[in-house]
Image 1 (cartoon, rainbow, N blue to C red):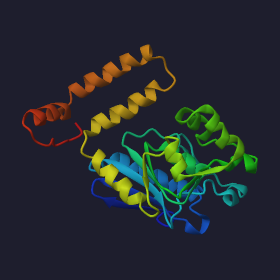
Image 2: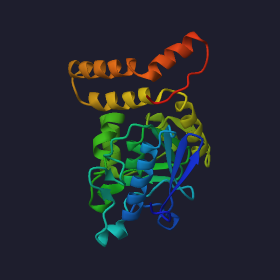
Image 3: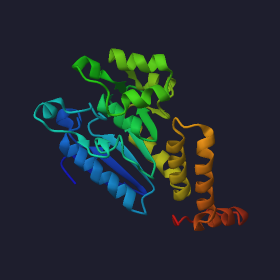
Length: 255
């Protein structure tokens, strides 16, 4: 992993992943993309980790693609995994974006690729690609119209304007709103809450939501049935039901 560009810290059963390029407002270049890929792989393979939190240093989430690096021929896209190694990646564990300051362009798209978003009230979200002769190709043009009403999404995409964290919360893009400087702490609290749930169930939820995206309900119910049968046969499901009848907290093994 590129230690200089992306930092990781274990906080309980959560992996805190931090983009660390404050001199470039945490813009994503090839090194950051590689570092994020390595960090997400660590989260995925470590069975003692239950969730991840993605953030940036110096009160800035990410200003998006590093345009200077792009002009030199660098790419922030990882084949098969998308921008920053995240926007097209298939992950089984929950990932929470903790947004302070700017989440612009690819930075906003990284947040949209996460499962939950915690943001400071004064954070700034925007997709300014059209002002640079580009398009929000890291998932922004695809995901945003599915998350908020069409006309509001088009305002982001066609004008390049920014909105505050408070406005993003009103639009339904943000799960938790915090005071400036509080996003990481709240995101870690939320991750800890998720960690009390069965890891196989969390992975199944993520998989089913992906499978149902844009697909007729009748096509998804058989997929859901298979997922349910697999869960019912797991040791964790037996443990969860047993713990309920014995009035105690379950002890998950992920099996």
